[in-house]
Image (cartoon, rainbow, N blue to C red):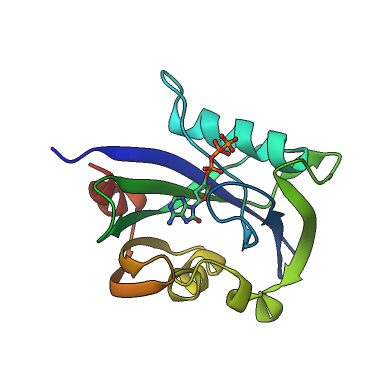
Length: 165
Ligand SMILES: Nc1ncnc2c1[nH]c(=O)n2[C@H]1C[C@H](O)[C@@H](COP(=O)(O)OP(=O)(O)OP(=O)(O)O)O1
């Protein structure tokens, strides 16, 4: 079986806005994104989502809900990336930028800076913003060019999770 890297990605929502951070290093440097990272050995998916959210923007979510799975493949890489996508609108703590995400900013849904984000974001954010369950299978031919993209909406998270298997 091909190797896979596992990640989480969390979007906090408040009155028609979503909290994004500008990535300062590593994968996706210079792009706005939600908060997340690699799932550590022995860590559950949801615990990773909670930990990365707290580390990257200082906030703790009490009702994380998994909405989707994004599977990334690239013609120039052997390893696929599986990203588990969560949202929450109940959170507490002191909102603050971090070494990895700086600045952080609330964006109205109609002002999301898609031109300064991963190119596939625009294809599945609308589902995520509407709290729909979804899967996205995205294949890049270069770092910024999508060769193929299949987005699907479901009635529950269970079907989306099949993409992560
Ligand atoms: N195409 C693609 N591949 C991998 N990861 C992502 C994408 N698009 C994305 O939006 N993402 C997300 C998934 C994760 O939330 C981050 C990447 O995590 P990363 O920053 O590499 O993981 P950390 O564990 O935080 O990294 P370090 O702390 O070791 O720097 O982007």
